[in-house]
Length: 275
Ligand code: C2E
Ligand code: CA
Ligand code: CA
Ligand code: CA
Image (cartoon, rainbow, N blue to C red; front, side, top):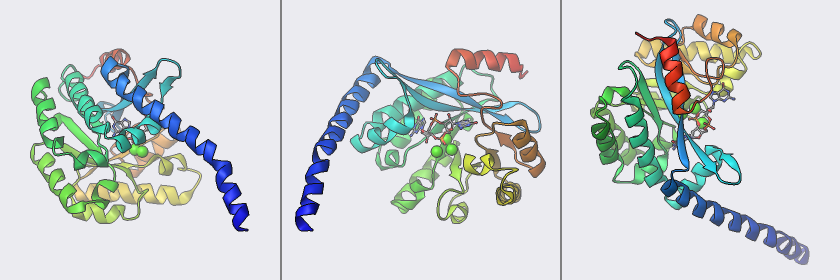
């Protein structure tokens, strides 16, 4: 049995080396991408369900890879986090998103995703301050999206950073709400401005009656606590109607718009005529 196990290990070794090699290549290319402008932000609107207006746009990273086309953030963010590249990338995202938002009508906010790893960097709060100042953007127009993992690890230190950010006048949103172990208890820990109901609940609206009950409960909770609720991943008119009925404040998803390059987003904003 022992020999067998050793054999198994040897069998996987080349495959593992190949994987490590591929990761190193990706890391080198990602570093290059940051320096050569191959990273780009797309923006996806969050629509107010009652007034049919764009309330905010979420910045979503895209990497235009020379050979592989667009590489998904789901693939390269984890590598950026492991290698520390997330710090310069995250600061670039903040600067870029604030600058872009400053060109939009004043009532449209910009949402930026923060990795839990960014909370370990002393530079996070100063980076937010300088991104706002350089763009001349009012802090109230910036929403920072975090997941529960920020409050899970190093929670005391991270909580202090979150308070410092919120004291700047920036809004804090809890992303992927309902997917973690203790989503509810975090609402008690920190005064979030917004809850984003994870798309897994939205997807099964009308299919799984538990999802409808959960969405209704979260929308009610948000209303009682004075927290804006957003449904993510809204793809059908039936889902939208359902969310509207349950009292959700905002929706985001392919039904209204996919994430768009800046030029297309500006066109959409102009066409939606917010004035
Ligand atoms: P997320 O923050 O939960 O973003 C929502 C994801 O759902 C985005 O995927 C978006 O394109 C996708 N989506 C939006 N509407 C729909 C829909 O109707 N149906 C479906 N099936 N999907 C929809 P994306 O752009 O691939 O981003 C994936 C994740 O990568 C994000 O999840 C976020 O966690 C991370 N990410 C993206 N940009 C950044 C960034 O600048 N910084 C950090 N730290 N993370 C980022
Ligand atoms: Ca997000
Ligand atoms: Ca999300
Ligand atoms: Ca997510």
